[in-house]
Image (cartoon, rainbow, N blue to C red; front, side, top):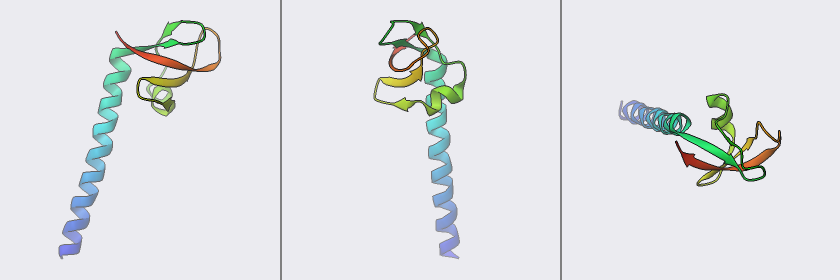
Length: 79
């Protein structure tokens, strides 16, 4: 009985953490844009999934630049 309760609590915590992380990233996707370090183009990723699965550093993300068509590190800038 106790094992089931612990398992339910653990699953709820994991699901809650994943949902929280997705909400934070959704906020970043909506309110920030990126600047390519190679060509200085300012852009937003086309889709949420492109932004989500780009390699991530603290304030940079490795995304495909729409101007130079290269995967480059882009700086995160608030809109």
